[in-house]
Image (tube, rainbow, N blue to C red; front, top):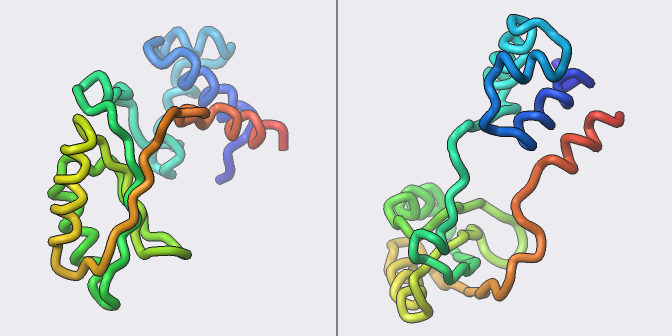
Length: 155
């Protein structure tokens, strides 16, 4: 079932006021608490809502250097390298990609020297052919989904 107008209103509230109770969300939306809870449960089941935990800042955790590391993998070893990446705590995300490389990782490091150590660790993984690193200078648009939710709600 696609996301409808009420779902987009619910998602908007969740994003704008994440610490509000289900009862208060229902009141703000003018729907029964049971209706709201059923909608939330369905969106979780359908994978629309994927988490409810806090967003954490790697910089505030002592890892202010953010880099994107492209990894080229020996053909046939993508799964093994992907699994090995999960063991590297500095890797925040990893994606299979098209284009220049096979994997794109987002890496948080304490400083440039630490970033180099992480890159060396990646280069030494079995199946890794080469890496290419780009260091982020400043975040221009923070991770967001609210504009997407709004555009889906307008359809």
